[in-house]
Image 1 (tube, rainbow, N blue to C red):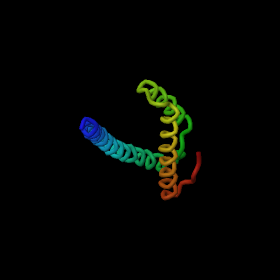
Image 2: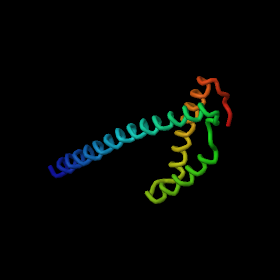
Image 3: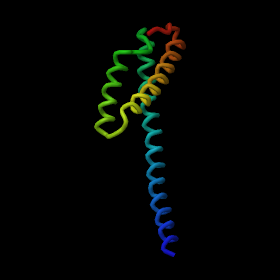
Image 4: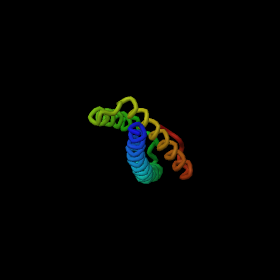
Length: 108
């Protein structure tokens, strides 16, 4: 009987954790959507002014900043950097598409 109660308690706790995880996942998706709305505006601005889709100096500053934020938050900085690199690659791809649709060349 005690084992059954322990399992039921564990399932209740697990359900609570999973509900929190689901809420966090939803928040992450909404935050990423907002981030990409902003980076799309940056891409349009860059294309309109003939600026290159990529900005390696800015990317390095962001990596340094996010690695420190990760350390401060007790998150693996290597993971944070990989995640940022993934997002930045997607942003650059979008910027290249915007530039191409505006007749600009893919530089930088």
